[in-house]
Amino acid sequence: MPEMDSKQAYMIPTSVKEVNALGWDYIDIIIFSGDAFVDHPSFGTAVIARYLQKSGYRVAVVPQPNWRDDLRDFRKLGAPRLYFGVNAGAMDSMVNHYTAAKRLRSDDAYTPGGKAGQRPDYAVTVYTKILKDIYPEIPVVIGGIEASLRRLTHYDYWKDDLMPSVLVTSGADWLCYGMGERPMLELTKAIEAGRNLSDIRKIPQLAFFMTGKSRDRDALVLHSYEECRRDRRAFAENFHLIETHANMMHPAVIVEPVGDGHVRVNPPYPPATQKEMDSFWDLPFTKQPHPRYRGKHIPAYEMIKYSINTHRGCFGGCNFCTIAAHQGKFIQSRSEDSIIREVEGLRGLPGFAGNISDLGAPTANMYGMGGKNLELCGKCVRKSCLFPSPCANLDRSHARLLKLYAKVAAVKGIRHSYIGSGIRYDLFLDRDGYVDDTSYPYLKELILEHTSGRLKVAPEHTEDEVLKLMAKPSFRLFERLRTEFDGIVRKSGKNCELVPYFISGHPGCTMKDMEKLSCNPSLKGLYMDQVQDFTPTPMTTSSVMFWTGLDPRTMKKVFVERDMERKRRQKSFFFKKK
Image (cartoon, rainbow, N blue to C red; front, side, top):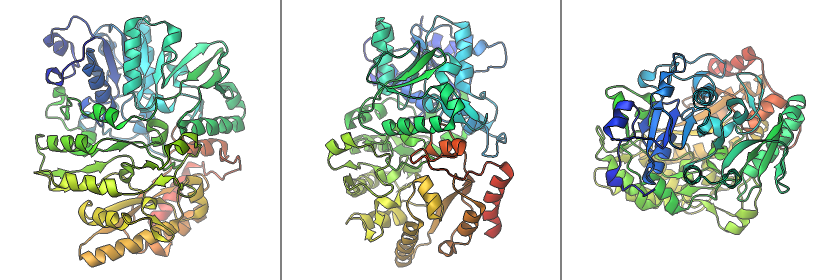
């Protein structure tokens, strides 16, 4: 199929009326999503739709289909020529629906008006089952956060039980995990060409279920789902292997037996090159909600509509975080030119007043960073480049980032570029002070030029034993940061605050630990209401600790507070003290 010139790009249709207006007599791919459809690169549905559109495919999106009625939303566009795509949205549907106390949330930031209840629990499974029932012969490809992080046996906090791969529960044909542009395009081409099944099963970054035993001699074979149900230690051992390979440059094929077959997870594509990264963003996004929502407020969009994403990935390796499991450990950065083009494009958006709300990524100050010797990175099996201590091969220079900030500031019409994403202060500070000659200039510019009065950081806790189980640096490093922060603010004469974030109820954290946190003298005088109760989410080390009571890295026992009332008290204790 010929590639589509960006000038010819159309707004992705979401209804029969819009499809007819384009004069289409068929649709190649129909994507069902749990989110409202926003044509912005921060929303995965839009990225995949635009990327496939660029290659000439006709893509339609059905946002937030009604799964309770006669299922007309699932039938209205008919059957696609190639396949259905399914995702739960930008969040796991269970995290979207429920608090850490398992209470139903009253709003949904990804729905017009913030209205709750517009997607089902376990949305990927619900949508897929409906589509397979109505169109049994049409392949269903699942992806996004929910599918990606549930691709193998996982602990589900809301059922308080282990669940098998979402491939098993949903009946989907294919699962694309991680950032999906390259595997989805390759899979689309393969389905269109009618390539044989064994050939398609070699495509990187895909997972699928097969009956019978695996014949791949080089695969990493895990304990079965059934073994994990019987033995929590087996589940912990599985996860340690999964996590190790998820953070390797050249991981193995992973096979996990379940029922009368097995789930096979192919290794991912190599980290995207700068040119590839630019191609993912240099697409004809309108950066607007779909016209169907005209006049309606979508909270998640309002938060990011004037933001710029500079890179993907995170090598921090926090045990409670899913970023590396989905985006990868290795930083994949866009070129400065691509970022500047997007910055210049902001000036044409309605309401833009010259203020970029966030110039960053999962960890804003990892832009352009990586190993000094990439051959060593190719052999590395470390989960984190920063914990328990920074890797000697890691280049932590902020020089490229400072140059980027200067280029953005020079764009006509740009007044401020704020950093709303998280930062890692262990990238510019260590026990002895600043890491290199770019560290102090970076921190000074960050505080004085890129915050709106509050610099938010995440020490997560004060007690070293808890921090070790989180894979976070010692609190002494935060104390050093506060000293440097106070010095810079005092000299500048500006009014800025340092705002730390904390987690209560994490495995290893006791009531006594929270008492010590709340009484820590280094926190005196700081704005202190940023604490959240730990929520075990699929495919994190911390959730495995929560379920098994074991640290999967060492297999040592870990204290876990599972009682809801005591978890609530851990969090409320913090506020009472403050």
